[in-house]
Length: 371
Image 1 (cartoon, rainbow, N blue to C red):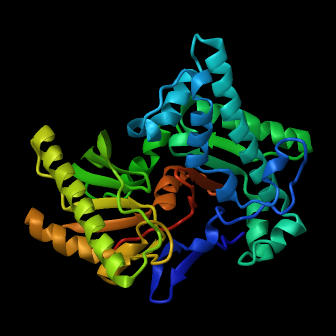
Image 2: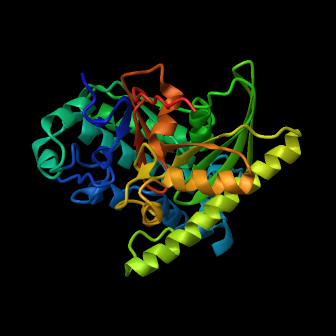
């Protein structure tokens, strides 16, 4: 069936774009599809019962049992520390880690079961979805899980718990796909959009938590190396500003940070490879974006709209001047970037488990103008 979550601009019939109606963070589980698994989430929206901060809070609450030392510097790395504890020789710590992963895996199972069944109470609570949207979720075969929380053994536990929930409900489950390089899936997805056959290209991932930096080397059209660099901490991520003046101030600071991240990545790539990077810079961003225009209402990057109607153009002008070359900026919605890894699987939805859920569709068509 036609994907109701994909749209096209009237003046651009080539490329698809994903708008905010695809978000499942605002979905409310008004009625649980099955009881006795985790009844506490009934009546809550998805962002209220599943997000990275909730996962971190659960780890902090059990830090003593997990034998994890807490400090503000490493809070964002706590999911990684929990993953390490899953195979710990300390049986108490490993069991605690398993139970935390299982708790959130069960919640994923309940969410997916609710999406599969599309019961009336849950449909009524999601006003911007029609029967067509629910029907699309019902007929999907695969859900690909990517992002930090879906990595390694945590992802495997999530998959098992999701399948357990569907088994309890006696319903046919989605086929859960896990991505081997889940934490950097966005980078690999962006790499598919590099048109240059040879050389080095800068690929960035502007997330809500981190600004991931990397460069990709290609030879005869094939990717031969993907080098990830230390990320920058995302800053100026407040969603709501008190005034237009404050919004503009924060937007300028964020823009300055993003420019520095790109320029530093460019410089490092040149130093490490001895090759001048190509002009294409492919960027995944945690914002709905259409032809370089980012959503001005949602995510910490929305404030960048205050700098101009088209943020890709803002980056183009500033980077072309500072790098002294005519660059090409390809700005991609992060969920779409993740989904590009699964372009051979059409009956699939890609969910990134980052700060919140990101959604992407492998059947999204991206056709860039020739530069």
